[in-house]
Length: 341
Image (cartoon, rainbow, N blue to C red):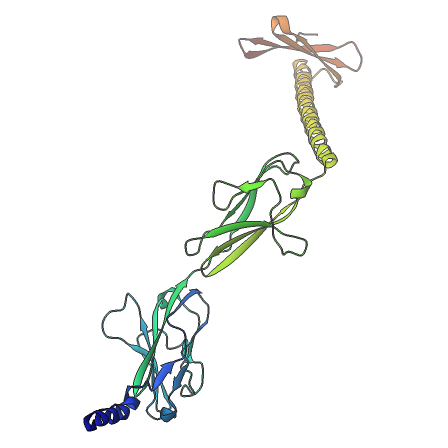
């Protein structure tokens, strides 16, 4: 009986040493997905037993564990005896700090700014005071979707089909695409009837366009760390306006063809006039300079059966006339001298 009492007294004496002097007041292991460039708080609040309160003998360490890093663990931030120490070689020195100016006040949480993909890893908080309490935060840093491009394929005509397309050229996989037709307040997105998912992830097919399909459509591209959007304005013209556009297009085409025909006709006339003037000049030269009157009328006669084209010059007195004959044989032009007066 005496031996049993002695054992009980010894167990009661050892119980304070078996109790935890420090505990992390945070639920289990945390898993965070962060977008590149974000800032984050890694929590590590702790509690001390009443008999262990006070900063004396308190130590805090933050360790980063990454798959690429081998060798002994490196502490990138620590606290001991009112002194904060920034480790070296982790690349976090300029972007990390304790949230509290005095971490001994039951909060060893840290803030990490401008996170990069290289910051992905396991962050371990260790609080030491007679015992050691450990808390882990698993951080995954990814790139959010790049701003997508939106466009449509098809005609904005009632009754036709229209394909809305959306594509993002950057961002961590997997990327999810979602289309919505926005209300006037640019919120409360929905899709009207007659729309179905296209073959590609970012495609939306609208069958048989109606006025109800007109409006602003938004494509939202998301992944685990963020999202980006783009918008399209689908504006259908009224039927009367559509007919006017078609008629206007036809009339414009006919007008353009008419102007082109007039231009060709004017060029032909100008060419014929120059040929007549040249023939008149040849007639004048053939007289040896004795013909003083200049040509004032130039006519053109064509005899297609014989391949001969005559150009005549009539002079002001109506009596003198010179003719130049252009004879075409096998595509070769020969000029015949003007007959003598």
